[in-house]
Image 1: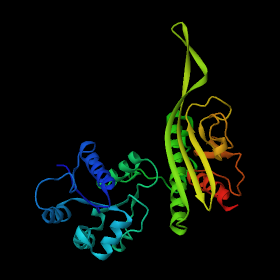
Image 2: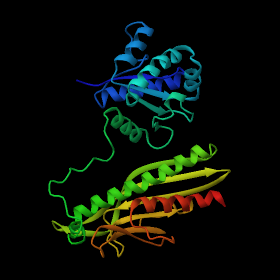
Image 3: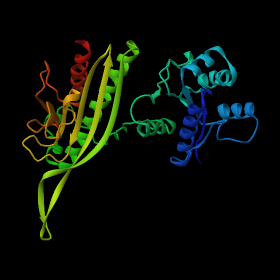
Length: 323
């Protein structure tokens, strides 16, 4: 049976109402939720719909804008009525309320402890997918199965990491570290934004498929290879100064560098091809376990994982707005 979802929001303007209707309809048509909000539900009386939506739905989405927070904290209009009901729902089951930021604004006080999904940055579809995970009570990372044959404390040093010789495992590892890099940068930027409201940042993602310089001879003719790249771009702005970075995951690179995570700082270099970079991290095969081996990175500590790489990228990008 599909989960019932109710969307709580304020009637800021017509554009905002259309956006909320689209979000709610996307949850219905793309993900199979029984989602509703006042603009797409034409039956019944408004107060009844509010009570039913907040008390009988499995999850409630709270769309936060400055107007919504003001009305919620001052109990104004329909938002005020919904807030009184949401208070009761919050203390019974705070995980059933999912706040999302449609515009930069502080959350209503009772939601301060509830993590929100920020639709003001990044890609709408990526944010929508994150919302769906929350509505389904899914986590981004899955828990591993508890081993029925646990290692002894000394076994770890004896058993090698066989992923080092498995190309598929290498690509899984690189994807995990790439995601960890991006997640760490985004977390640090969001923390910076909370501390300095005038600070702005933008995140964009894309997948690029471009012709390579190599080809294979197939069925009597040469077929040019294509390389695929996962790309993330960040731009930060503060007091009129900007900093930018583009980094990508290269699965197919046939150079001395091998597969890895590469990137360029500064917008002036953003048009350079994927053969150019001023930092990178490839797989280090010299040890017993898979880890990153960074180069062209001048850091005090060696970078061995995506979290550390994300911190390096964040620090270097922020230097542009500190100068």
